[in-house]
Image (cartoon, rainbow, N blue to C red; front, side):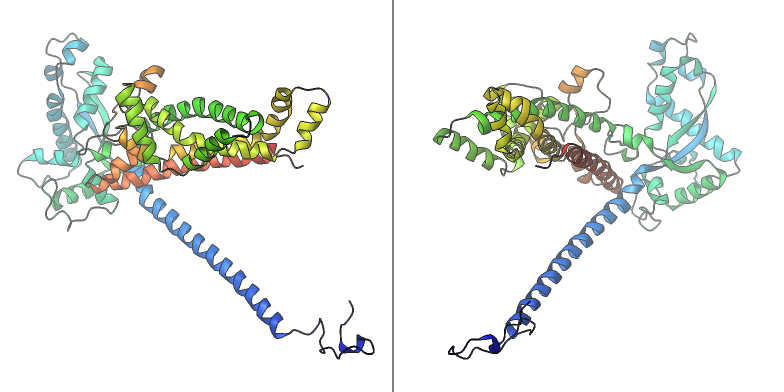
Length: 454
């Protein structure tokens, strides 16, 4: 490099300012300082973003992990034949006449007996108060077991029952003795009894598989609530979105990008598609309510309607990403195909579309992931007001029977008053994030696997 100084100026030229490229001027110092500040701003912005991300994940994990554990009471229950089967013929129709009110005394007596057998004194005048340690769902659990196997009547069977939500909250740190001062359902003596049951091995905290595979419960039984049925509802909704949005979106993109004439009408369509991608999702919910439920009379709260609404919301995303992928294919590919005698349609479907497929699949999966986490459109079609207590019994029922969806279920739990439901809402967010992360990882893998560099 030549050092530019005043000595290089020729004779007769005005005296140039004496400077050198190796000399750091004031202007250069300002420029370097500006670049350094810009880098620091960038690092600070990324650091703040990572800090918020870590705080968010920490909050979700610490608040949601307790939902995957549950407190259970394990006791033997004597299924008294004289009370449950007066005819003695084990006929399921006769056994079904005994309601949960008939099973409740059996469970209470079994718990009292188990406490006495383990040398645990009952501090209540009425021994029946011990039933407050158990979930109100245990009578139904015993009844369903008997109806599934009538031969159990007359035997003593060991059951693992759900503890009451406040007992469960006590062992998770959600409920304290002080917080029970104004609680009519439980008092500190119940917690003392629960501590002694832990020492005797009658009460333990274990992994709660029913939270992942179970169904939602009423507001009085939060310990029984699970997100499994709403996961199935989300699955059927996503099937509707995938089957409708992918072919319609890709076909529309191919026509607009490769075959449509450039005129004001196509410009109008393209502008509207771009604008629809920015429309709030609740607007699509209003549209779905008006068109699919009020006009077409499709069943309310059904995954089919939810899928149709989310299809409308996802289509602009798929169309925009597909058109971008088609544009990214070099024109030489099209020209080469046409040059060797291929028709325009052959050049598109045999050459351009396969090369654009990684981008199309990535855009589709990201659109589906966005639809999976949407709640607002589902509010308007009634998927938050219905509590599905059972899995659909057929594929048709999965589409047409009222059900919920994961984000709607989380919203429903979050607005309930019992803190146990708040804990489950965080747990549901963990499951939803696992699904979203899985779909995004699949999109990244597909892009890396089929990506072509020109």
